[in-house]
Image (cartoon, rainbow, N blue to C red; front, side):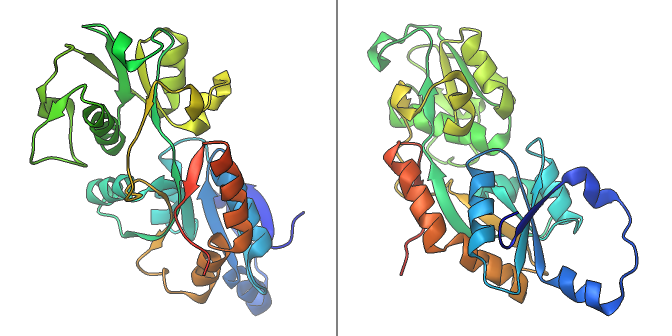
Length: 271
């Protein structure tokens, strides 16, 4: 077991807790439960767990989808999450009347479009099927990338809320299919001509951003993966200790290694 880090599953959080007096309560106050899923997000949590200053510890709570980590955080079953960008969190807050807060951007995943059919953007044919995420924020991100590469034109008054209904020009008559983010790799395997995806998911079929047909152009880290807490606990000593650990030299070194592979870019600097 690594220093400052241990693991549990999200289902364990729903069980009752036995007595243990003030000593156990004090120990629990020093544990920051962080919900996450899939590498490299879980890897970052592990490394932060090694880097966190005593007496604090990080407990990695692994979840299996893009809903549980926010539900667990909102319900105070965990203290933080590390699995989403701020626009995604804001949509959750709006839908659930939530109080989640983005504390710190950690890295920006290199996202783009992959194709089992085309070798270059010039090969894209009229009427090609395009698989994009079904959730609102990632749909907007996917559409903005298409606009960056002159494949569509969006209404001038939309950005991170863009949907296919906001497409003003579609010169290739692209046909859009909404698919759950976790199933986009399956769409690629099924032969869909253009598929938006994250490196975390597309690597399961042996692909990296180097294999993408085209990539996102974003210098503002708008969609950087964030450490997220709640309004009521964001300033606690334990959560602030976790924030320092997530922005440690150890985490930055790990992310820099993945940057060399073209998977992501660190979204913070070491002072």
